Image 1 (spheres, rainbow, N blue to C red):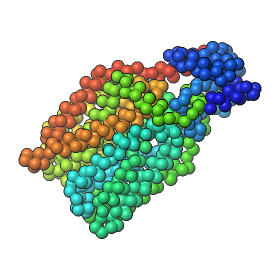
Image 2: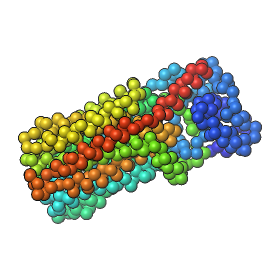
Image 3: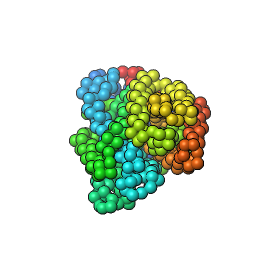
Image 4: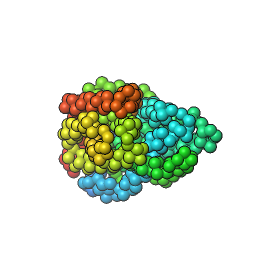
Length: 526
């Protein structure tokens, strides 16, 4: 609390504000510095205003200092306050004064987050590789089975309203534990549903809804997790690991292999519940933050818990940011098409004589290509910082694959469909970390958890709408019957919109510029 800090100053405790000038660190935040000065002067008239402190007092031989700002929207979870060398702390003990490094424990934490994400993805794709078998087992129509997938988008949209606030309120560790427990509980509810004879579709749907809460909690956290655990030059790489759909790739092979008949559905559901339960256990054992500094970003002194009003104010600021709105459109269409096509690929190609197993193989290969695309994007973005260039390059490539699908989806084109579908996933997955990182850059200093949550929320909204639209394009009177040729044309038109939007984008790299300013300031002071 700000008042508590002032009381410490009054009692003679070392002045925590003998640090870098806010105005020097952030030249564009003079107004905030002056407002902070006014608050400090009111609470403790003898306090030297931050904006007028001499920077010469901030460095001592062999020592590093921290620079401090006061932000009412800062995270209230003390376990995850940024680990930054503080005044009087030895630089060697803090990880070095010249270069920030990634602690090995960060990669361990990232690995187990990927494991948790994989478990959630396996849950998501329990039924999509085997829709006809599930429909027969539950005694429902294929459209009802599709709603087991569609409901996930609805839940995602609703929960994403609070994920950004939740991460700031309880921190990344507790958020991931909560996500894992909710996913596991929902999976075991699905198992209870199939114990009943006949199996209960409403209870399966209930379990599906509960488990679906874990998806936004584990995906929207990608940039927040990267900020807590990794230095700035490793964050895009960390984020792309979280965004990659490894679990979906596994499930496309696993589900058709395990669920070979209706009598195997129960065992399949138990297997998925066990995987999701095991995936959350490591989160209890990991710390909330790394033991060494990962950033020179300002340490924040909490003056209160993050409130809903602050959260929605940040969201409204993003909505008024035109460049961020362009990114919303690009990411929404890119991920929305991916969601819709992933849900309906099986139904789009089976009219041409392809089997569920072949469709599953196509999706699995495509997901592997997507993982390669994301793996390629992360290091390239971290090393070059040419986010905008990659955005303008990848959008046309992604669009070209949807155009190609119009012509290649026909009989006896298995290899061609698999190849183009793999290229499609490579390009769209490459674009994911590009757009998400640009969203953080153009919205800085708004918390990355807010911008990322909004990006993924809009993507799920678009995906949900596109699934419904593409389903209506099914042609029962066409040749062959139930083909989705018109839906393929619609996909290509939507993808072309992303090309136009990417060419329009001109957003600044505000976070990167701020980081450079901090590094220059540290170099001058040393």
